[in-house]
Length: 186
Image (cartoon, rainbow, N blue to C red; front, side, top):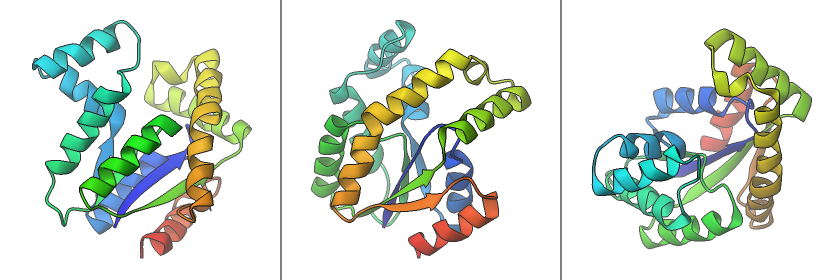
């Protein structure tokens, strides 16, 4: 079964995704990374995506969902997928659900919860440790957190209403969070 990982920036999604991929063989689909890779490919689609990225805009829904669909179809049916960064809003959720249904893939949703202050402190710490410029700007951090609450929390709540959401406290040590995550995966 595939996994869709949600969590505010700084919640530890990337760290936990890597651990799951290592132990359980998940292939990680990270939307932003996938779009950047295609943008760098020099293909017609890549050039279209690059034009949006260069202008500082998000790629349109149709393009993002086509990238998601092609990524899914490029994997063997028995390859478990872990989605990070999709669906980000209710419109993407509708398209994502349709694609997953069309290709016959079941998925489970998990949210790594973390309060705003802890998330903010983690992101700033990450900026210092890893030199990530996008994590050093306080206004950019607050803006991304606001977008998450405004657009992605409704998706999380919709999946919760369907009974397809597990919440794990992401504020604990990495191994404790991972132990809970493994129970959901099992």
